[in-house]
Image 1: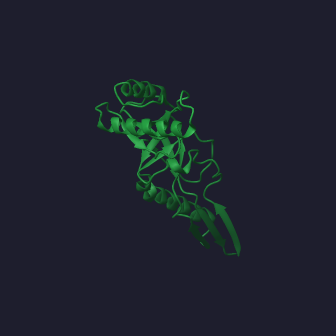
Image 2: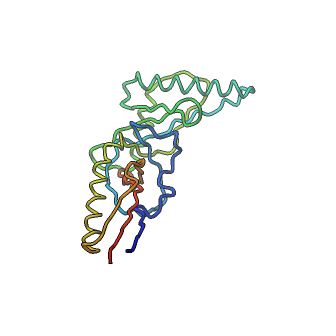
Image 3: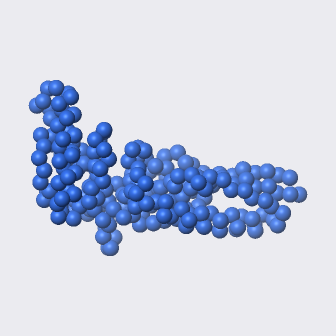
Length: 210
């Protein structure tokens, strides 16, 4: 009997480039990722382009604690202002512990557009939002955002099962395959300016009787 252990993902390192603090159960932010090779994945169009809001320190204030206070106060005012505005922008607060404090969210249009288009639209809409604060606010590099990645788990597992069935047929009738890792967190890889691939780092244990 031969026993073979195969990884369902060839390279997991770098699959998600954003810090864990930028991941929530409802909305996953996806930055630019290095190329990786996956055994099974599904491709989906994202829901938003997300632009980070960066609040700079007021250098005219000498006390560092007060600099941080003014940064957080400005961020809090901005978040509330966007929520109450009719700009068409959404906002995702990341907490006031560290930058970025929030992401501006702009839904993807029905027609395909590049990120530069969404950045231009976000900047234009953001100018209509009025808020108070001593610290300067700048917008960072855009990323993609996907709502509730868990809703795709069943679809990913279905594709994995199809792949295993094909593998089983190609080996022999006397093969036993065990799969693990389906409960792992869903990994996401950006493909282009609108799409991402979703996958699971599963493993297969294959036993072949001779």
